[in-house]
Image 1 (cartoon, each protein chain N blue to C red):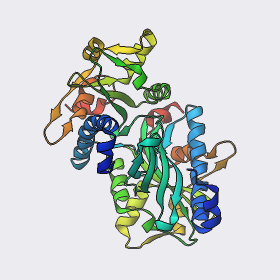
Image 2: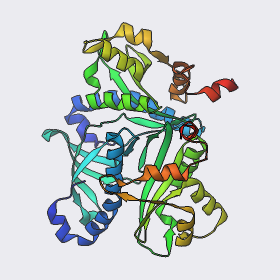
Image 3: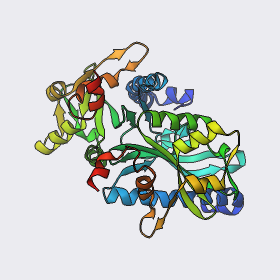
Image 4: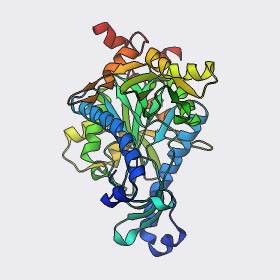
Length: 194
Length: 194
């Protein structure tokens, strides 16, 4: 998404937040691109949902008024080794715990649905300088068993799977999926071959 | 997508075309909603890709300039009976053949990729008052074996699977998937149970 240069000067706060968000996203987008080019997985970031209000047809369908909508699903989805994959990227600025208000209630329902229908759903969390794959099943279980409004970092470290940044790839999350879902029955055929 | 009322008056041609497009889309969106509510499948229309140029932060992040981008994937994706599903909806005004310029070359590559990775990809074509599920494999084969720039309606009728409009559902395409991919090995577990 391109913002004009002058916005940066006038609205430094908003832009710096946006850029923080784009860092993790960019590293994941790079990985998606790498996986696609190397035919390892087909995973795309869904377009940002935008509500179009005004379109100027005089100048070739230029959108002149629109607004960002809240997504009800997760940001990335696709297919890996024949399995449906969906996940979201979350940067966490807090150091001691991951606030659950980062995930909307309809996204929680969506994660439950995907798992029930045989897919894989998870979060990629960037926290304290590290990247973690946090399984949807662990997230759901934590929410069910706790009344806390955040997940302590100790739990993220204990249950999450560390993801590595690799030069020329970005965040190599397929390796994390292999590790996190090994023995869960999703990739049985592949596991037999190894 | 909401367009202001006055556009309809001024730009009747564009709007009427848009509405034609929305008819098939709406019937499929209705079905997606029904399937979701009845826990039969999780399939969403991807948001329309929009390139944001200007954002007015003074009035709470209102997008003041943007443009529609060309999608490189298909419009709908999700999971059905544990299988990755992706498809596009195409309304065809021509009566004798379906023009292939309706499908971009990167979409063809994308369809091939999905099939190779174990997913299902197809088109829902509305033509001559009927709805057809046209399998991605048949589309690829037709393109490989023919130099034609369109698929004759006779082929659509022969290879396509008719989809029915059902009251309260819309276009019941899951029934079409069951029929079209029966015996193809995608839904083996389900087939055993029947």
